[in-house]
View 1 (cartoon, rainbow, N blue to C red):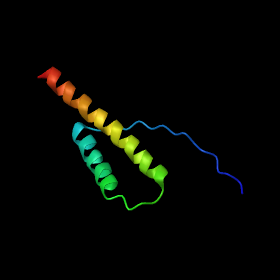
View 2 (view 1 turned 30 degrees about the horizontal axis):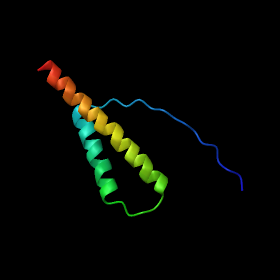
View 3 (view 1 turned 45 degrees about the vertical axis):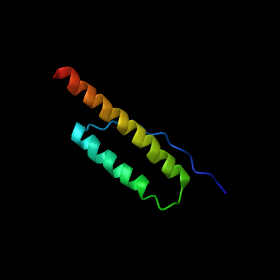
Length: 67
């Protein structure tokens, strides 16, 4: 069986702090209601959740500095 090549795409996404919060809520919900399935997908969601947490914390820090 021939294995499909893996692609490592990187994207840049511009989001407001509110957009990050909404996206994080969606990822959190998906993980909380995880029905099982591909464990690799779940690991990707955990990684995305961590990135979104960092983004939220950075936006909070920026707000504290400017106020």
